[in-house]
Image 1: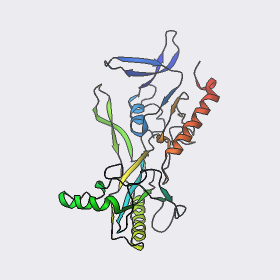
Image 2: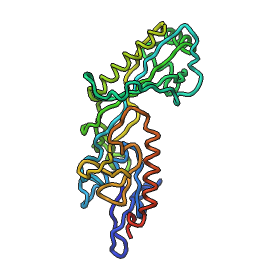
Image 3: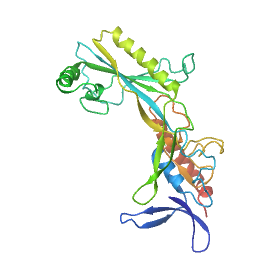
Length: 295
């Protein structure tokens, strides 16, 4: 937990209270604290660090710590072909992407975007594994499917946008960890637009496979991918937790890093954006260290 502490001379200093391997409580004084515990544990730590100065949790003057938790919708459309597709070649990531309709965010059916990912390697068991594409099959039927799919399956993955909703959030649970600290409780549901995007995009993917001679086409289960939000950045301290550098509005020497900063999610993998935000924040810290770190 991050706390405001008092040193031997009576000055206020910042620090982090933590438990060591033996369970003893320790204090690590720090001029600047960077909290990078991802979208679930970062809000949990901030909310659990409430004190007399910050009764609703650190950096929570806006009341938005933990709120606007988001994820991409992720779903695979699968097909079998008579031809050899070599699905075992390559890696799961680094696929070919299509964003032909990405800019058409607003239409009569939904608001949002989606990205198609093709040329994805599909192996027997992996992040995207052949066995997981047909959870309805068991025993001999699953074995026969695996024998066929190992050489003849293809996939189009859809990554869909979802809206930032305040009711999708991380809050504190009534349950506690081994040290008596409340655990995180997650509340999340996809909005209707996100589900419509998924239905629309998988229909397009199904038509693509049917048009090129697939012998069988099916759509997998919708899941959430890439957790984002919970400590969103923004220019208004009344509706966001940090500025664009991850510096919290309420405490100038407390920074947050990671995908929790995202105020919206788009429909692309966030890795490069997370990296860019980290580099930008580091450059800002280096250039402003004298004014950020308390003296």
